[in-house]
Length: 98
Image (cartoon, rainbow, N blue to C red; front, side, top):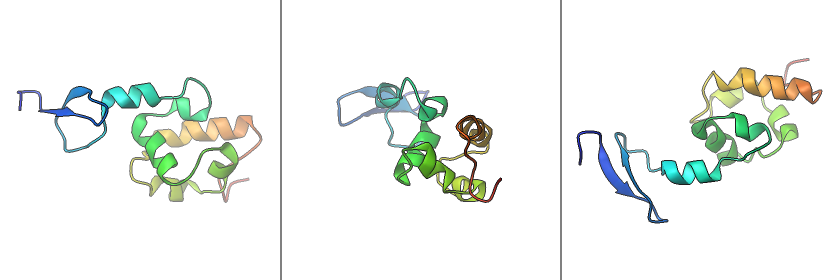
């Protein structure tokens, strides 16, 4: 342990320091961030929340309400306006919105 946190090594061999017990490797997360598309505008926890719930497309995203999305572990309220904007640009909306 260092003053900054615990030194960890991920399955890919990356060494990093984390203060929390969160197992995600920041190096792997950076490598996995899409360069384009709606997932590219989100922070890693929100991207993982969508992926863990099988949401890969805007059409799949539109089948959920804001409340349902916010119930996902890792999805925070700051992601909702970003996602709403992308949906509106494509003529879509969250479930229950018109």
